[in-house]
Image (cartoon, rainbow, N blue to C red; front, side):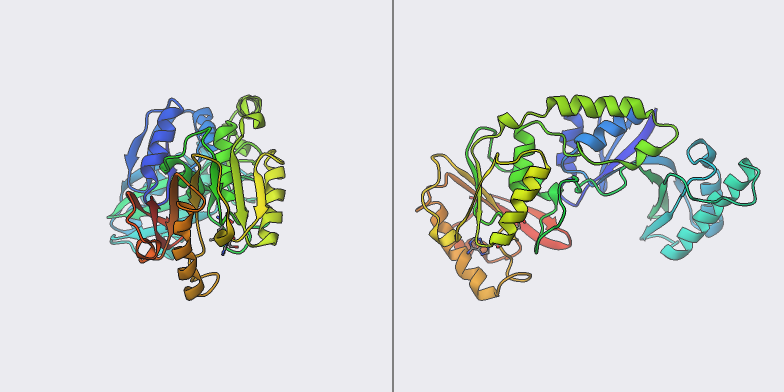
Length: 367
Ligand SMILES: C[S@@+](CC[C@H](N)C(=O)[O-])C[C@H]1O[C@@H](n2cnc3c(N)ncnc32)[C@H](O)[C@@H]1O
């Protein structure tokens, strides 16, 4: 049995845990993610199906290191030859926090040296060409505790493989999936995003409704690993394709003032296998007419920092209250980085949660 960690953005660990549980895997929540035990197929399933996790990493070693010598010994004691083939590439990255070893550069180069030394001995070779498949190694040190992992995902999991260009202010797909999961919206209830841009939130909702695995059309680094059975992975992917049913998507709609963002949205939707399944129209939020009865709104309006001026944005926030009155939205859920949002909106949120959009601290407000 191998040990894995599904890493998650701050505030999303609980959601990742729930998702792992629903895949029938026993999760343990730890700082920065969720650990679980399982074979390579279990990890492949996690890569394919997790909507809110950043990456899935194989834990290959753990221990204490207070000096570079201890680090060298620890890394050198890992049976790297069981994982890494003679011609494989194995880039090493590092991370240090509150530890005696705080130089990331040194941690990286010493770890790399320890791995190279070990592999050279085992493969009886003076030269490792590093041209084959990739095993991206990460050495994280926190309070002198070292965790050594190999990344099984490749590109981060928010890259679902349907996006060609990201638009002006993209919302990470993993965060969009979290906004959907943390909202009171349920499959079958009408859902509208009045600042939908390239449609990330609505596409994540459509994935959920249509039972589409988020990683359905993208590759994962682990599929190239020599100890992974590619055929079994292909079978899982085929099952996921079979489960995906676009006909289940209904009641989703999005509007925005930016016609170019909407064009991208349509393109992305088609590339995700959901062409025409979401109603998309150009409209200023301030002119939005009545929405379908019982509509839930989930949206990520402009922050005023990145797009548009602060004043414009604040006047837009004031107008957003009309979503509840003029547009008859039953619930309104807003991700915002503006601490004055509730004041401008003119009402206190019934639920609040701190989340991060990249490095930007935001609040997810539910009215
Ligand atoms: C932070 S972005 C949302 C990004 C979006 N979640 C995505 O996945 O691309 C804010 C969006 O609000 C739109 N917007 C700004 N002012 C608006 C208005 N008055 N009415 C409707 N949309 C507006 C912008 O065009 C932009 O697409």
